[in-house]
Image 1 (tube, rainbow, N blue to C red):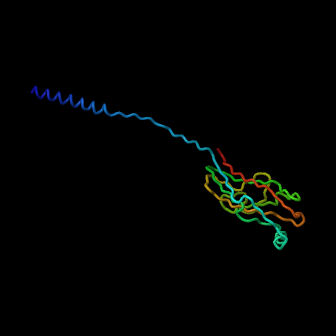
Image 2: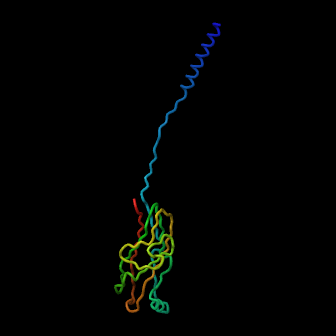
Image 3: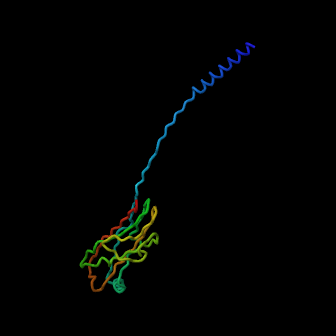
Length: 178
């Protein structure tokens, strides 16, 4: 019986020591890392075919343009490409014409051919001004949204004397809200 008791004690000691050795050989430690990315409101405005030019020659095209009271420029010149990560607006303004006479700024008209997020009647020709006019806006982000535009210049037989007339048109893409 004594041998059994000694054997039982011995086995208990071995079991405790083995368990201690087993636990002692395992160790772990944890740390955490926080990844923070702060994204500011961001937008990008691209422009393709930014310069538009038209020559009215002395032939039936000039007579027709003056009779109709306007000349249309090529469609898609320019085309604006809108990228924004939040609510945005696209606006336009123009300088006065330079040229042989002070042509009215309102003679320069613009329309947005895209049909996407167009505002304030710019899906048809609207006269431009020196102040910002909203062409398009949207309540969310967009990627690569194309806005092909087209210019039209009003003509007047009595006022539009021969010469070169130029106006600089500025497009601005802005994010909105906080």
